[in-house]
Length: 538
Image (cartoon, rainbow, N blue to C red; front, side, top):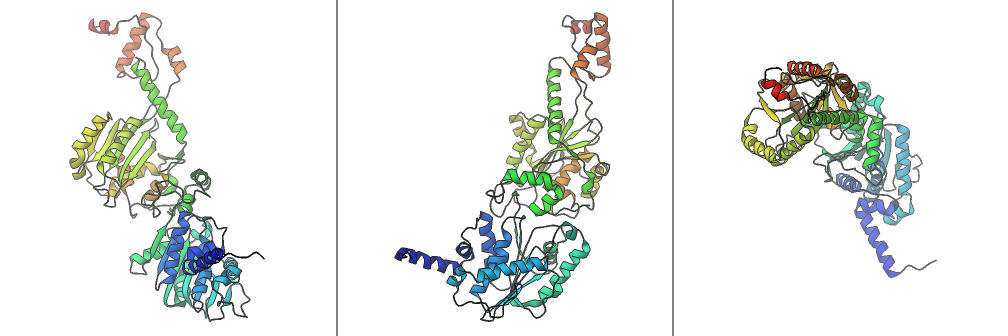
């Protein structure tokens, strides 16, 4: 046996002392191979705080396969039993067998050599044979249960609930959601000891899941909950301080992997399971199924074709466009007032279908969102931009006009009066959407938040994107659809004049059509059109 140096012995004693006092150090000591990310440290700190104090209520929502259960359903109960071996703990999950598996892992941790070195006086009672129910020799107890199961005769100084719903079928069943809710209220809650704390750890499935109901009850006088909301790809104001769109655990799930998951699982599952923003299959005002999808690359190609047609027009050639592009904004008064400033870009095709091409949404100051507006104008070249008349526009209007000119972002800007409430202003867009005439991209960084807000309107917390979208309803009298594309080769071969008489006839037809035609026309260079016009021959 190799000798342990005095320094190694001191390090071991320090490690044990830290592991007894701190849950994160306990995880490292009992599970050296555990790969921790920044979000694990936040989760560990929060659950340790909730377990160590009286009357705590904590909800943590987190994507699947991000290391939540190992911390909260295995290491936390073992550490808790070691520190307070006379207390009782209940751990629940959606199924009895799964709960028993957790119980078996917790018991294994308590029986490990690492645990015994940390808490040498804490041992299992001689009759502790079952994986889902066992006791310490000092009177403490552990109980694992499936949600819906009996807890008669058991109490809890700490109650941990890990994923109370199994999957989509259960989440979409009101009967199942009610079953979970009734079990929480009439079974688990009645087993709490004085000063007991509750930790709910789950992936979101539905607005009306257990986390959703508890947060709703909080607003109506129920228990006050601390909420830690961890999205796979960060939203603004991320609790970890991540940049928007940054991955939660890039070592295991980099952004590229998450984007592939997003494409595979679809928008509803992605928004709920990974972004913790469950969306209804059917909203009250806008329904999820109303919005057909388009290929963003196909839309970009059509937009590029339009820009190419503009350049041909500059050389004396004309060709019709596919998208007619328009922009609109909804402004927030200040960056810290809770509302967002939203810029929205649409394209209208020849069939009068509206393509949502781009959305920008941020809480920020006017100097920032005016520059973003300039960026969007220069990128998309909209025919018109709609704004609401009001105090905000009057206050920033002169600065906005000056800054857009400095940025050479030229666009016709029109103001519209908001004479009705939000639901009435949204009626025009609602009608088009219900007919399948408003299209969304198959994927986009802004898509989840956009759909989330749509399907919660008008009862949702935010409606800034709806306000911007409704602006296009007020602009309808000014919005014209795009025109169908005509192949370049056919246009030139069919329409290029070959005689002076054909050139005269062609020019007269173009003039009658307001200077527009569905084909590209290349007129003979030898014809002096200005001279013919002066002579009254055109």
